[in-house]
Image (cartoon, one colour):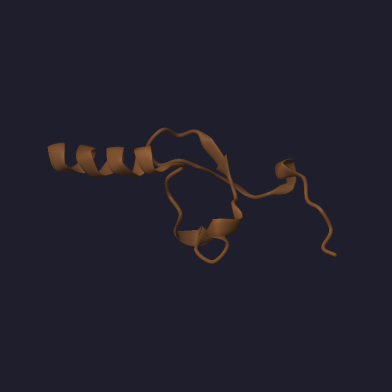
Length: 53
């Protein structure tokens, strides 16, 4: 069995939209380098902000 990791031990990034920290998630395992936003809401907000500019 794999050794358990604490959430504090996982890598973190800052969201490009809201600047809040978010932690690594299993579903992002293969694309962690490409992840920029903490949520769908921030990703959608970045697209609308780009359209306004």
